[in-house]
Image 1 (cartoon, rainbow, N blue to C red):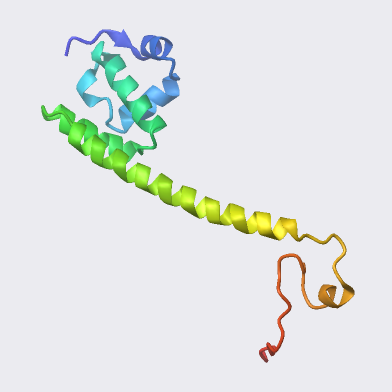
Image 2 (cartoon, rainbow, N blue to C red):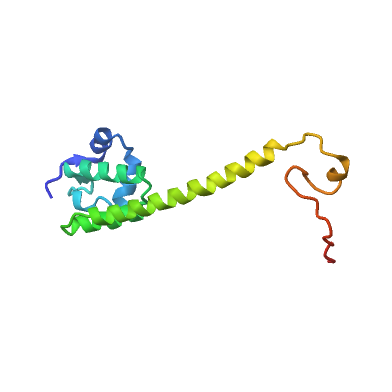
Length: 146
């Protein structure tokens, strides 16, 4: 393998904790750039830094470790996973756009509730609800018998 970097050096140079690197190694994310010394220490090649940078950037864009593992597997088989990465990022973008639309609806609803907020609603509303600002009176609704 030709690796001679110990985990502490990789941690120091990458800015990641030893615990994080150990977790990645145990998860199989660092297999191609990691080996073991005769005494069992993890040893890494210089390529570990490129791999860790890819993983860090991918996570910052919302990819899970499972997704990253799948993309690294494509790379480790000798292909560039750019098409698969693009598809996953497009899916993430679509999810974010849907979340933004849902949040815009929620924002409008909250603004509407707050614009008509009454700290002391009429007494007849207080007796019919838990919080009249959030609930409409339940006119005509009968209680279910238990």
